Image 1 (cartoon, helix red, strand yellow):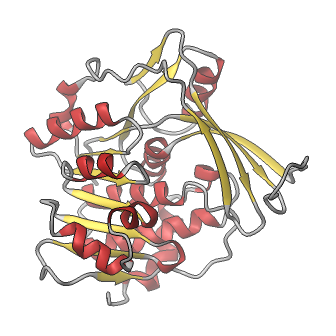
Image 2 (cartoon, rainbow, N blue to C red; image 1 turned 90 degrees about the horizontal axis):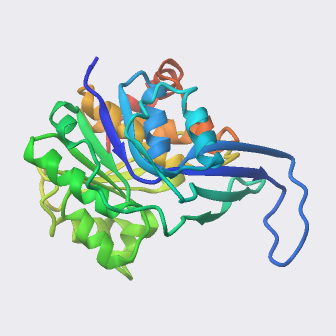
Length: 311
């Protein structure tokens, strides 16, 4: 097993998640069936996923010097994620979200990020990048992400981008910087309107230098374009059928699992298939990233899918 850490950089949120029957279409008071609070955010959830699978991982992020930040750090202390490189910014509020999850597992997310969370990446401990196994960044702190991606490339460290929804010009800037560009479906289609996911993936990938360009498709699994293969081939990887309880953080769990597989030598097909299963397993549990699986359970659920051919 790889003994170098994966560095995850990006958003750090404190989530309050309510399970309700349905998301109302107008003003109402809704009593939840369940409620949980957890440290979250795309990079944070990916980091927890890597840790739960047994990988070494650290999170680089910004939080406020406030009680919510205390809660964020305390919650992560229950996971094997290194938090020494989380910067606490005096006078700022930690980012937070309120999330409603309905009986079908779909969600309504209302996030807030304090503008006073200093975006300057000058404090990042870039001297540690050369010893990393890989770096994974999201779209929510672009200044830090660009700095980390550039340093990782300088040292030949693999780079992964969680290419989620953002203004198209920002997406185009960021996807040019990573070796593994991994889109959400809405983000990909925002760059190639009036195209199918397959056509959009091929169109976007051929303008990049990335080794791998992929898109997650929820219950349909994922599609992957690989530079080493023919430029007009996109492989489809299915997932397992489940009854979704909560889809929150499923994509983040997918990215964390993909990163874990990459640094532990799994071939492309294996890491995509197992990432699909990890995301599906997460969706079977309420509570966002709290549903991310442990490695033995994940490998057991993945056994049949991993042996199947790609299409």
